Amino acid sequence: MEEVIRLPRLGESAPDFEAPTTHGTIKLDDYKGSWLILFSHPADFTPVCTTEFVAFAQIYPELQKRGVELLGISVDSITSHIAWVRNIEEKLGVKIPFPIIADLNKEVSQLYGMVHPGQSKTETVRCVFIIDPNKIVRAMLYYPLTTGRNMDEILRLINALQTTDEHKLATPANWRPGDMAIVPPPLTTESAEERLKQGYECADWYLCKKKL
Amino acid sequence: MACISPDGKPTESGTKLLRALKSGLSSAEDIAQDTGLPLFRVRSGLRELAGAELVIEKGEGYELSPKGNELIG
Image (cartoon, rainbow over all chains, first blue to last red; front, side):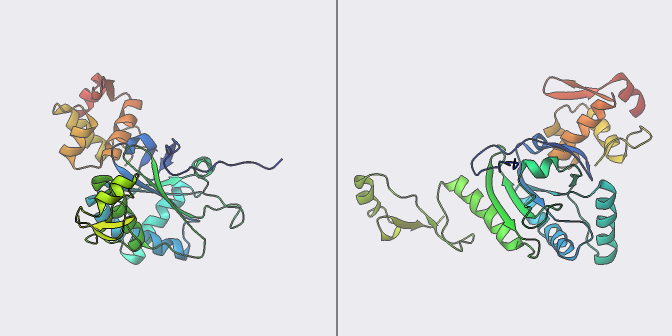
């Protein structure tokens, strides 16, 4: 019988875990009150993953300013992770400041649906889970083994989610901080009429934007 | 940031947490603010120190155990 694996879904609680990392044993609960980016990579000492780790380390200060922590994960051992981050520092001059889960038994990877057998039966694909301070999954990205992730998009996504939380607005395509945001659509004909008088920039009653 | 080394002694970070408790701080949040360590590291570190019986959970916070107190001097 084929095994059914349930993936986390947006708006639901992130699955709890306790796992060994390069910074000691960490529980998901340890991040309560902070935003968390949990991201998987296929394997240590591989070229695309190395470029991604350097890139994650480079955006880490910007993430910290936004109250966001990073937590990496792969099915490699602690010893491999330690050797790899030391190698990155030695060869590329970049210190990896965040912990990495050693998920040798794939316990956490399975909980988060990070192993996609169509891509690899043994490695995790390039997943990104953005988990908010209440441990709710707010966004997920899945990239194939061959494509390194875009750090600008990850930062943009964090900015957009935090802006939505702060202002109760949505963000349009390609939104960047400083751009106008979208006012949620009206739910009654009366509020649709009123909306047009409220000074928003409206293409029509259902598409109105405002400056932050 | 493992707080206990394989020989059972507190690491540099472990010692930092023990000193924070010695100074009278109790909650992980206050210790994170005082030490500049990320909150998740403080929480996991305190749990590890509790496992080594160097600190004791007390209500919402932690305090040094007699063993931890003796160690930190």
